[in-house]
Length: 132
Length: 132
DNA sequence: ACCCTTGTTGATAATGATTGTCAAAACCCT
DNA sequence: AGGGTTTTGACAATCATTATCAACAAGGGT
Ligand SMILES: [Zn+2]
Ligand SMILES: [Zn+2]
Ligand SMILES: [Zn+2]
Ligand SMILES: [Zn+2]
Image 1 (cartoon, rainbow over the protein chains, first blue to last red):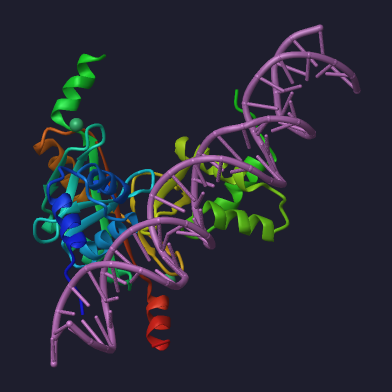
Image 2: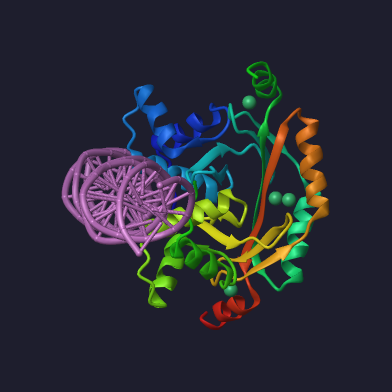
């Protein structure tokens, strides 16, 4: 049976009140900064649980860290600013269908997909142009 | 100036003669098995170079390892068996268009995308079912 | 062919994220 | 409240990757 602890709630709330993706380490630091004595291993476990229950979205940063984000609802993908971390959720029914059929067409089962777009958001694009 | 060493060639060839994606560690083991005394750090460096020169394709496995593959030509995506590493290249014009328009619609520039499908290939699916 | 400058190698240590351990603490049902 | 069971958290262990740095070798000039 799955029990309710203040730790899990703390992680869930810290995650929801975070804009964009965070690493487990990052969330742990945030929580500590707010005075919580929660342990690092617990943050890892809570995030893994949230992700496997579909309450959190996870992806791997380009340098191999696992990043998490509170999942609003349903399955979706992300448009991420590689400079400031701003994240926009994007729907992609077409992509879902494509992934499913592409996997099936080659006999693959238990298909999961990684679909994310990285770029520079409007602000960062302007900033980059100005710094030119 | 960039020099030519047998090590770099060895990595390039080992990579080309590999079906699917390999990790640096995996390639190093392969080379050792073939009698090469090449060092692990060198394999990492060579793969990173190949990737940055566009001669190799790199992606991150779901558990955070960096995987490499000899890059054939052109832009494409992959259907990867998470058990045996078998890789199938898949084209996806629809996805390319979607990625482009989704980024533009939110003011993002310099968009790149990560689109990969992981699953169990036909053989591994059968094997998994048999082991049940 | 020889030398010299400089990029490259590789054994090993260091890093850093993530996971395993396990006794103590917390939960929850009765 | 009591007790079986789950969860926690400090700490050790793992594991991929990167940094070190002295020894080495490629290749341009002589
Ligand atoms: Zn931005
Ligand atoms: Zn999807
Ligand atoms: Zn397979
Ligand atoms: Zn593409």
